[in-house]
Image (cartoon, rainbow over all chains, first blue to last red; front, side, top):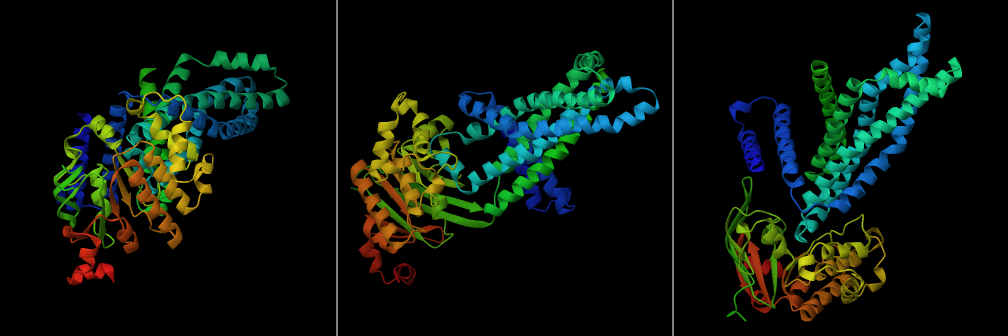
Length: 277
Length: 246
């Protein structure tokens, strides 16, 4: 029902654009933007409709969880470690100036858990996972593999799209968790080397500084980040046209759109968490 | 033959993309056990027509009945069930890149347990399909290790594994060298004899049409312009028909 209404609205939008309606008689870029928003909303509505109705593609879902998690783990780990190191090295002189080096663990952990960890991990995954999904589905689309799946009596939307979006939604919070821990460990290494702080003391300070109000909103928003990464990647790939050139365009657009969406979600999440806590 | 009920019955089908009319009241029948070749110029809507038959494309108006099922009135489950009876050979083979030949063949098999039951060991069925296209040795190869002709054969094996009653071929010899084309044509004939399928073959290849066609249809301006045996159409003095045989 939702899906049909959404499709109808999207079709009307397409027709309005094609007919050059005065209502939408502004720049072509803006027109395309609204059409894209409409199509993406319809795609999301279809995901919710098909994602929660059987049959479920458990095997493919687990396979995608492995690929998405595994594909990004090394990059997330290295980036998080370096961010932890650099962040601490850059902050130390300023804190030293004010005699507040003992606040280092609190400052690092709160900023990493609340903001830096989730957004950096999500941006890495936007570049790696979202574009990867988009390129994979795009090439399947242009080489008629998705049509072949359809005529063999398999619902390609369920098999290819639903599994990837769910996998990205589930894997991103786990990657963020791993990334946060590694970044904090990187920070500890600097403190251990320059301030002779022990691992136990450092992590005691970290856990003492972190509150439920830091962890909970940050974790919740990572599910939305993961959903956005999977959704945009699948949308751009699944609806890819214009042959092999279109695959490149789709992969590129997936990264750009996902990154924009991530910042938007982050902004909304910060506003909501500031109101609630 | 024509006293039988057609397995595919197309009546007055219209299909447009924007302002471009592709099918303009097209009608045809496919009877059990026959090979119908559809010829037409590039972009004349041949591929769109067979895609409408399996609901890959939605037609604007008219009627397409496949094995007595009106395509437009079927829900997703009914359509998927019907699709197991229709094989579709794509122009570019459309093998799944990320899967080996074995996995490509197992994929449709594992998804239709209601037709085959829970198949614990798929090897005999996979091997049977591969042997029928003469590529039993390619079992563990990946699609990128196959030549164009081999890909076409594996795609046919993947189609055959579901034991379809109808097979739709979208330009089966396009892009292949003359020798491989002849092999594919011979294979299509073998398949029809072995599996007693009814087929629609979309092609530009006059040699292919001459060998395979029980009946031919020329699709011109979105309509069934002419219909008959190869010999009947070849001897026509209509310039539009003659153009196909020059």
